[in-house]
Length: 180
Image 1 (cartoon, rainbow, N blue to C red):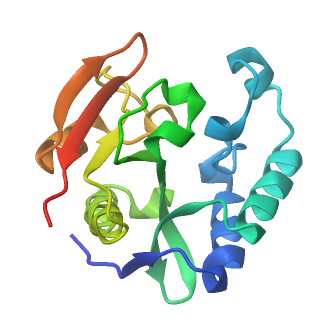
Image 2: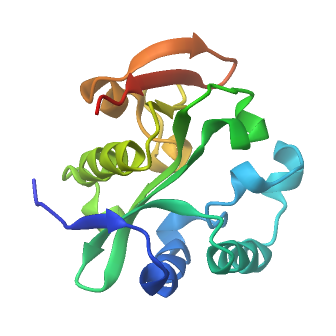
Image 3: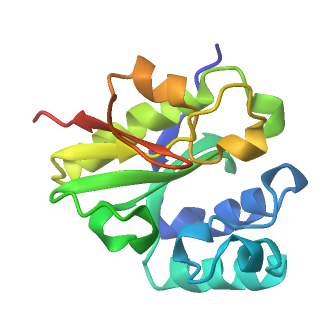
């Protein structure tokens, strides 16, 4: 496992994050699914450029929070976080909780512990932001490809002390108490 530096996203990293999200191995979403008001069929028909522009506006407005993994100045990993109750699609109003919304790792960096490093940085960032709990919403099926586990692999959360608190139709909710 190769250690990569991680840090909380700052405006100085916005352009590098957008460049990372534009990579072919990152799909078309630009980490905007949770902000999209329509259903899955409409989402899958979205224009990648519109998603990119929406993400750029959200970054400029300070509406996006998370942690990045870096190789020099390049972003090679991203974990988006949000106050849980602020995300209607989660249907989870847990007071004092933050949630992991997206997990993205550069294809050539996968399998080296980068998602774990991002999660550990996210735990610290949520704790520093005074959240009492960090939640995750992974799909529960085994054997999914990287594109299907964009909310993070279930086993990663379990290995880092998250416990299942709810079973949903497509996703389970896991939680970890953030002790101070």
